[in-house]
Figure 1 (tube, rainbow, N blue to C red):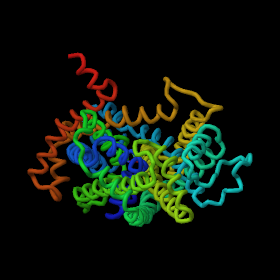
Figure 2 (tube, rainbow, N blue to C red):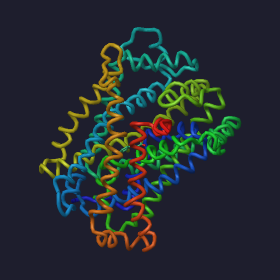
Figure 3 (cartoon, helix red, strand yellow):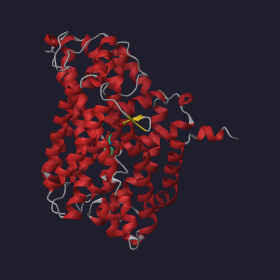
Length: 467
Ligand code: PHE
């Protein structure tokens, strides 16, 4: 490995990967639906009890091998090398995610462009592009979003192509000159923008209090058995586990880094930014009568933009700040999905970085285009009764991520020598904490993941109904 992150570069790059579009709508919506701070507490416990545990396992695999996930398993496994290397192919999951994720970042770009408020002349015309000024009319806002997704392949493709070239350009520069540089300026800027938006939100008194209550007053009655499983799934996706990202970034972890405190910082930043995003979004929603239970893209691309539109020029500035923040959060995650497979092609086939990216680029471009086409009316198609978008999301998040998490836990817990781990952990973690982590790693965390997986395929509530 020729280049390593700087210490702060590692923390920012992994935090950049963790903080993503998931924080903007998954986290706040799920918190709201599952009883506010009661869910935050649960999420925190599971993030530390399972997410943190598996995160350290993936980090050990990366750091001990300094290789991409496939070669890492192959090099470290004392026997059955080929079989173990299959676990490393979870990097395919990252390619699936980045394909639809870039399309969604493209939507963010579209709304960023809309937020300039100079598109009045396109209104009512038969323009090729669907750039529109933000509107305060909820029905119209919804119609605009639907039109963009289902009728306007051209604008969607244009935005996707912009994102595509942007992220591939960054990864083409490598870990230090591309990924680290991007994160070192984008992550602090993202944070500053969110603080400014939050200060603005705090002055909208009624909305802010509503948002605080929604996110922080515990309502245990909304906490169901399902909440546990939802929180665990969120912890996985949100910490970028199970698709080779953490293994790959840890291969460039500088030796002297205290990776335990770094990991705790990353988890803290991830939760903090999720909560900040939640407070910002829900303040506007509560203050101006939006629907807090609207989830997913509807919350941001439909409800939130109507609220910005009500505020005139100030609203334009706020919308620009908000969408550029989302763009930053998204691209720092997207680059972390491309790097694992790139690193694999470089290591296994001796390819140059550029050549590897051309191959990966072709695949991502095709998959991303299929996502756009599958949701557009004229070209819509489904696979196994799901949109292509959902197929990629389901396969990566519900199958590849948990399976690969279990593999990492078993591999580090049972196959790797305990002595090697002790040497790695000793400078940063005292004996008793190490033993607790080791027990969680071998038994508790993988079991928890198995339960979540089973529940994804066959809801446990249904099974209980048998008795
Ligand atoms: N953690 C990112 C988010 O919350 C998503 C992600 C998943 C990034 C897997 C990298 C790998 O949006």
